[in-house]
Length: 260
Ligand SMILES: Nc1ncnc2c1ncn2[C@@H]1O[C@H](COP(=O)(O)OP(=O)(O)O)[C@@H](O)[C@H]1O
Ligand SMILES: [Mg+2]
Image (cartoon, rainbow, N blue to C red; front, side):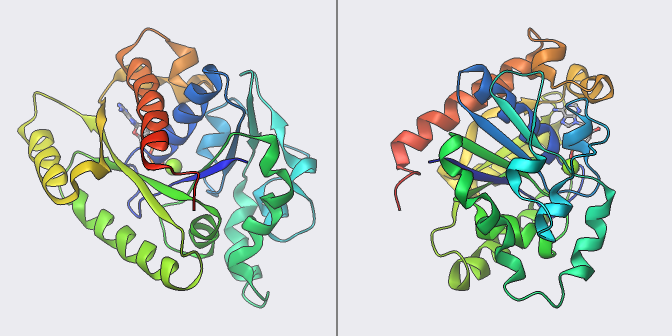
């Protein structure tokens, strides 16, 4: 049964989409069956895989319950990686779902019949704490939070931790924090080191040893519609995401993330 990983942080531009796409690709590269769900109306995970529109539907149709998952999921150019695309319609979901009972549980229910088809379901979330991210938090076994090595990095993280606590107490008691991932790290910049020190001091083992450096290949790859692992497999960006996948699997075993 798939382990569901929500990539989340209430700040924008911290590396959520990059991490969701490249962790999904790295896991697929080591022969895991991966479903990537794009839960952000900005659809960067979708376009980042070279898909610009889908007549078949998107996460929007999933949430308003006019299509089921098998109707909208797409195979990608990457063997083992399946995508549930997003599109801009998803902006409307917030308002359209207001009257729907149990609206925060729709995503969870809609993936339930398909969980055995995959080893991992990775969800990319928008930078806000609305109904979309809430559906992600209710569905996930755990959260992976990218932390950009910049000013105020810890603020977004504190907000996320508070949301996780609230969701645990009522909607998803088993929700874990899989880990915090330092992204866009620049070792020439003292700020990166200071964010790293703060994060490791506050969060200890929750911070992945793997660090994602600031790397131009990572920032170029989305405009080619490719994960960096496909765009330039030898780049430091690619290697760091492969390392993240390995560390993730190691921690999954060590901490028994698949057990309740
Ligand atoms: N490690 C990195 N090195 C360089 N650029 C990066 C890196 N990670 C992300 N980016 C770029 O930074 C921007 C924001 O990243 P993104 O993953 O879209 O963040 P989010 O999904 O949190 O908004 C994008 O243009 C992305 O290509
Ligand atoms: Mg994003």
